Image 1 (cartoon, rainbow, N blue to C red):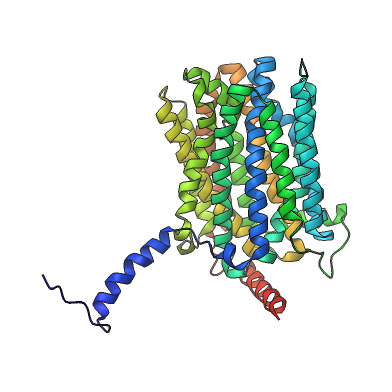
Image 2: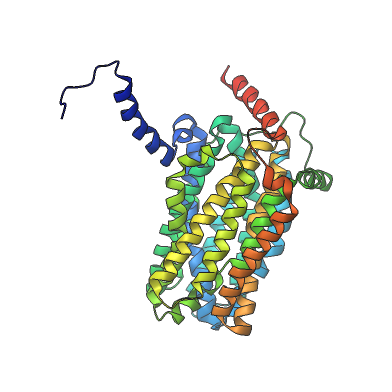
Amino acid sequence: MNSQPAAPGDASQQGSSTKPRRRWRDLSVDVTPLKVSRDYRLLTYSSVISGFGSFLTYVAVPFQIKELTGSALAVGLLGATELVPLVVCGLWGGALADAMDRRRLVVVTEAAAALLAVLLLVNALLPHPALWPVYVLTAAFAAVNGLQRPSREAIVPRVVPPDLILPAGALQWLLGSFTQIAGPAVGGVLVATTGPTVAYAADAVTFVVSCAFLVRLKPSPRGEDAEDASLRGIIAGWKYARSRQELIGTYVVDIAAMTFAMPTALFPFLADRLHASWSLGLLYAAPAVGSALVSFTSGWTKHVHRHGLAVIWAAGAWGAAIALVAATLNVGVVLACLAAAGAADAVSGVFRMSIWNQTIPDALRGRLAGIEMLSFSTGPILGQVRAGSMAAWRGPVFSVGFGGLACVGAVLGLAACLPGFRRYDTRTDVHALAVREERMAAHAGASL
């Protein structure tokens, strides 16, 4: 074997040494957005901290309702209480995001969420906690989230350079996955050992800490030609979304997938069926594990240009994995299926977010973010209602299995009806090219 070192000009040796590095970069997450944008870092820190606390409450609320009622239907009705305030406030929050300083709205709503967590804690500390405040406060949380989320999402394209939009979306999904792992895992332990009180208290603290990061954001004022928030403006946003089949595809495919195959309302009952009450937190966390694995290796996403087609395949894979959950009594297999479902959901989420952030002009970004929030929030809410109602009728196993298979069928049907969504290509789409030019000009002007 030749042990002499390669000469500096030896192209064959240089190529063999750089290819593995390139392959590794293609599999690793790109953290450049965190390095180059201070405001993106602040948004990210805030999201991770408050997201962790929110997932504690996400586990504690259905657990508390189950303990108070013992009813799968009562747990499923959580979705019904959230739906109306989420729809109304999500649309109005999108209009506000285009009509006022987005940072101010995000800070105010974060403080309001902290107060709601305190009220949940007060009710839980009563000698006999009441059921109705849990529903009312959950609905209020949905309203606050609806008002805040469009502004939070619409800030990102302003603080991240255009060529880093896709990596920023993958980073958001990755860090969100870690909160979904840690939050439910810790929440499951807390509610099993101390009840919901400690989870609610911790959630309130995380909102306060999150506010400390958000107040440091630079102002994100309304655009020069922005109009006041109005019903007319909301309708204009809807008309714009309806005019573009690739946007409609991102909404309806995800709504269908989550409505038919979102099993989280049944996790407390699945844990009982598996004779593994200790697994409750793991059931909530398993999808996020799969999501994190995909996001952590998200460097490959920059080589995918048919984003609509990627969303379709991912949504179908989500449904198939959920259907397999109903086919086993083995805890390990159930967790593996949920992790696979989470991985598919991450792929769908990254490419849906890319389509939104790469093709929607800033003047409409807030209102369209409101529609986006409705698409990825109403599906899980409707899914809770569907899962709980069907479980009350035929049992949790039937509900989960039927929902997964129905999801696959619905996704295939929608894909057939939306050829523009299937054909979307970020390299040639006229909207993506126009928005990229707009953002590059805005960032160039901001750097002067």
